[in-house]
Length: 245
Ligand SMILES: O=C(CO)COP(=O)(O)O
Image 1 (cartoon, rainbow, N blue to C red):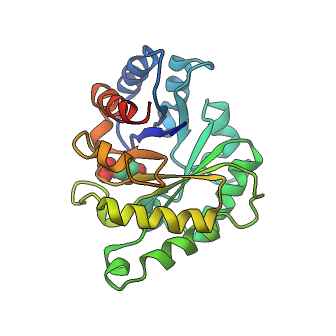
Image 2: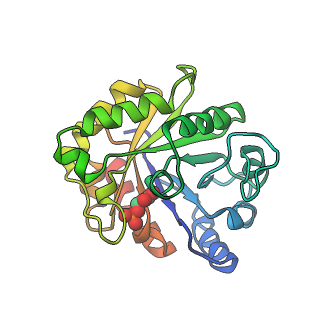
């Protein structure tokens, strides 16, 4: 395995001081066996990027951005703005945004196109609900999400796609079984093509990270809660790194 992504989204957590502390912790590390990334809240993007510096191997991502470059969109931030703050990746379509903030497949696609237009690496989140899985429609649902997100994106443009089943995310979630992740990696690769690396997210922790990282077709892990302490993040990156080195 030549490259394996390990990243964490901080969601709506961390003050500036906490964000800087985390950035100092990852910034102190010179050698990475994995491709590291952090996805701070918008308030901390610039501070984290500044702390890491432009040459850092740790990539910084924004959790969301509007599809227009600028304008009268109160409360939003644009892709050029998050890029200006230091983001080189853009997370798009997390299920929390789809569920609570009206993110549709169409908007996800507009945001992917905006990210590509401005040279940010899109990190597109997809995943089915427990209901859809129970009804046997998970593969089709996720393939549709992937195809919709990538409509109009030229074939050679690299993207990351995080498979994050809704039932696996957060305090009430349970991690997907490796076999289910493997099946979905095939589905996503078929829908997205070779330009996509497929990541898994949803209740990843130190105890299950290696098993999930071993899943065929999986090129990274996208972690929430279990990586919010920098020492925990580094432990997971090292455990996975031993596997992929
Ligand atoms: O949503 C996630 C990453 O985007 C995963 O969150 P948890 O790891 O906290 O379940």
